[in-house]
Length: 372
Ligand SMILES: *Cc1c(COP(=O)(O)O)cnc(C)c1O
Figure (tube, helix red, strand yellow):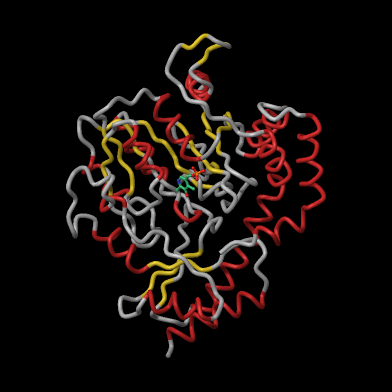
């Protein structure tokens, strides 16, 4: 699905030099690269504060801890997404309240959020799924009217830009109360191990986030609140400093591959290609097709596998049906779009190194199955 070796080959000398530099300096923990990365990423994102941490799941947990969410508080989130969001909600003994998805964008359906709000609701966690922003202007408006926090999960959409109706633009992760991202190797800005970061525009909250990520300390050995130990390794920061200047080029390569797929499948009524919302650009963390109900998805996966073409289903079980998170007893049909998408989506290889020949082979293989 990704070609990390191919990508590394293009930047090998810079990466090797950066990693060796950290090893030679032995500044493994909180070395200068960590601070430098935070500054450079902050500039890239338009000035938002950046707090590096150990991974994207921690970023979400630290965000919810810093907002002082209490057991029993309700948090609204889409069901059709990766489990990390719900996992953190459940770990903190908050209650996940799932909202259905928009069948076109795959993101939280903003027209269904208000019906899910109760007096216990404290936050909305939109996930910018597959690389395209959720409809943030509407989400921010709802949050403002109901006095809710917005925690953006931008693990799949770093670099994507949202356009507000007045023309103002903002990067994914910088619009809500807090933004959370992951540098997992296969993410659009991936390091060579685990990594993550939290984004925040509010000074006081930024201080709380920093403190919680660092054992709840205000200064060394003074623990004001219960925190966690969540650091980005210096080696990972050094890798990310090499890759950050390449991120926009990587997004462009992904878009080029997506355009190829779009053209290949344009004439095929049984395959729905990814919708491009007017309010967000797309950084194609995934290129995800929605198959017509008449097509056998397992059959397609096996057919592709035999041809040596990887494919993957993100995600086969919506979160409201996961044993761990179905606290409210959701039943079949409660979130029909999420349930349908989980049966019909399939993602094709998407990364920065796809060439014309590979793209043609992949799309021809998909069409061969669909048209037979
Ligand atoms: C990858 C991912 C995460 C978690 O990131 P980790 O760094 O693996 O903890 C959270 N949310 C979404 C949507 C993700 O894709």
